[in-house]
Amino acid sequence: LDCLAEDLADQKSESLLQKRVIFVVGTTGSGRTTLASKLAASLKDTHPGKEVALASLSATLNETDTKLRSYGRLLNITVSQITQDMPDQQFDKMTDFDMMVVDVTLPAEDAVARVSQLKQYLGDQDTAVVLSLPGGSSAKMIALTVDQFAILSPTIGLTKLDECETAAAEFSALAETGARISLLSGTK
Image (cartoon, rainbow, N blue to C red):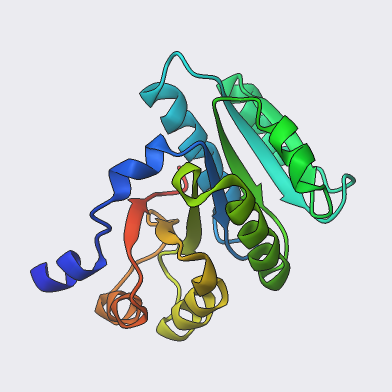
């Protein structure tokens, strides 16, 4: 287990909280929005003098995520909405904040394409990608999900750990995919 833990733990996880823009990707129901909000809260605590914001990257402006807006009100931080077709230069105007956590609600293929473009435009040193993955996912689901987002080189945020068990088979599947875990989170 110690060897497996060494293989899975992202040794650079501390640097995640230094990035200007953090994209949180994952499938619907993976705990992505809650994880994005928790990351924003952590950034706000870690950097008290900086302005932290939340954003939703979706297909259209009509897709308002009420859960994300509720978290924003609770944390007293701005929540913006970004559309998939927004030009990169306009995205720069949206990031007038010191740090931003972006909940990417697009389907996997669209999310990979758009986040890749934005990472290239903003630069790797200022951006990070976190893949929200429920702790109770099967080994097959882990392999499929990690493969879908592999091009983004995301770090893993295991979510919903208070709702389900993660066993040796799941940790082995994560290790086999070469995944690195930076965050552990429960729903509550």
